[in-house]
Amino acid sequence: MSVDGEVRRLRTEADEPGWEVDPDDEWGLAVITTVGRQLRLRREAVGMRAAEFGEAVGYGEDLVYKIEGGKRIPRQEYLDKADEVLGAGGLIAAAWEDVKRVRYPKKVRELGKLEAQAVEVLSYANHNLHGLLQTEEFALALLKTRRPSLSEDELERAVAARMARREIYEHPSAPELSFVQEEVTLARPVGGKMVMRSQLEHLLQVAQLRNVELQVMPSVRWDHPGTGGRIQVLKFLDGTAIGRMDDEFGGRPVSDPRQLRILELRYGIIRAEALTAGESLAFIEQLLGET
Image: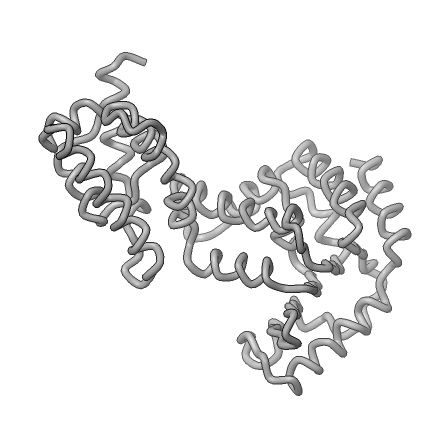
């Protein structure tokens, strides 16, 4: 691509929807405001006008002002180019580690934070694979079925956010993770044969982790309390917990011990009715051989 073509591409992408800062995201606003202020101070320190700087990095003057004013989330390539133009020695480019988290929806960041803080996570899924179990290709195929359709930028953000949650496996104090998946969630060919093969292979790898127990609920076992929908319970070090179930308590998250007891009771029965971890691995291996 020519230099002019690259500049036009950057200017177009920078003005796409989805790079605005969520006004209700206080932490996100603080990060983008701080990064924008540092960009402006460094630009002024080297004596560059906004228009001149914009030309150097491939952005319009108005977008430079929006980013510096904390009104716009800068792309990684913007920060990389700004670092080079301003001679920041990698300090500006390094800001992407914080900026990229602002790109994830606030509710997803909060969920990921809770999962990372938990000492035990219990999850039953009867419709789709739990997000922590999904490969990037599987997640993308699944999210493409959303209606109204997500834009390319929204898809990128949603997939990135889902993949970021998988950092939980590498956390030094990773929680104990228990998953019970209905058979249909493993048999439905989301994304096609190759995507599903890769997904099944990934499940076999995750199931080998010492802190993960993955079980399959055969479709023939229908008389268990999971028919009401998904169940998730997160337990924390201080003895508190939070949980939810699709058809209980209005589907809202709950923390009352009496309500949590109901969710744990149902999950316990589901877990007992499902295949054992060893039987489940064999079942997944069989599905992989048939895919």
